[in-house]
Image (tube, rainbow, N blue to C red; front, side, top):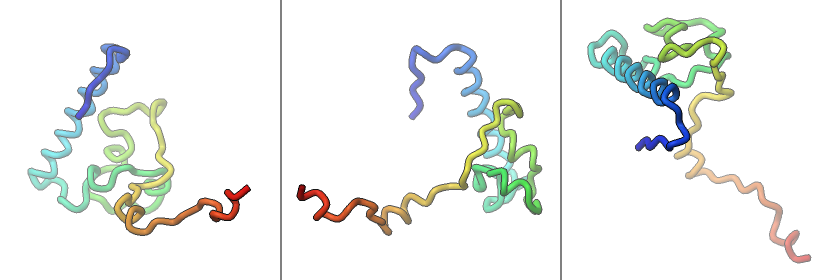
Length: 105
């Protein structure tokens, strides 16, 4: 659930609404069959710079992947990684804590 605070100005709320409308338009493209259910910008998001610089064999354009909802080049945030598999991390914990003996002193 999204709940904007009173600190958000009208321009930011308009930007958020525009993003939600653009996401709905992408959903409609999947629903109409223009984009496949398994290969679309929603399924493959976020697109990293490394993903975009290689060969491109998706049914949508690089521009649709890089600048969703009309994001300008100046405002583009490049995510360093694709999706994090939280469920895998929850099932395969790696403890990076010091051993218990180091807390004795």
